[in-house]
Image 1 (cartoon, rainbow, N blue to C red):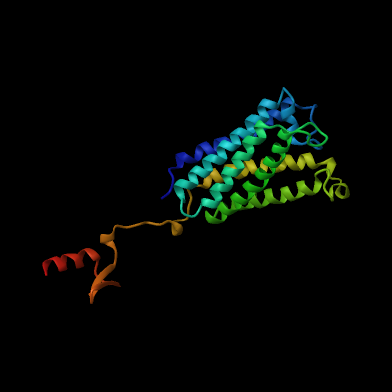
Image 2 (image 1 turned 180 degrees about the vertical axis):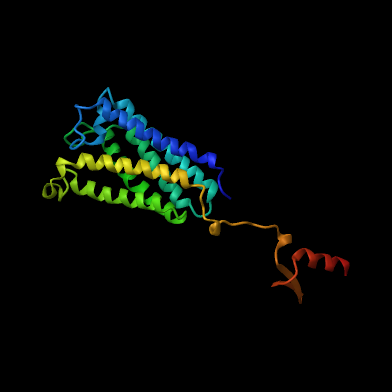
Length: 243
């Protein structure tokens, strides 16, 4: 069963709204936050951009939840793990919106710790979900963006201040840019997932026909019945009734 195309639009709108909202945060905090060196979470610490940054995370979470809902409608039997990952990513996004990161340096509060681990869930769950969905739905664009997000995550971890490789590669000078590219790739991932969630390949769809149309028949052998290929079940039953 394929979802009605109308169900794609809320998920796509959530991802698009996330892009617009975070762009507003960047504009509102221009000059106060260095996009090359500062984490994107710093926008939530300023009164001028906090609302936009939180709104972006919330709308992206709504888009992720809608994708999970769409998968439940289009491919309920085989998409359970993918749906769990999209829901986990959505919950992580909501937590990052509710609990802002502590001001640098370091994490000094419980809320900051929640934000850090919630962001880790988002950055890992969504690329995994996108990759699984891209393979299942034969969506090369979604698979490619998922791989890109995973590669950007690896680069972000390598460049993040405090990592073993940060000083070797000059990571503190540009890790903020990598994080923003990672966020953008995950927004694109949710958009593509929402757009393609109704495109389950025809070869993978199951069409359960009525039993009367089945090519299976029942033949009496002793006191039991065995299934064999031949005349339809309904015709066998009518022959038995006539006998």
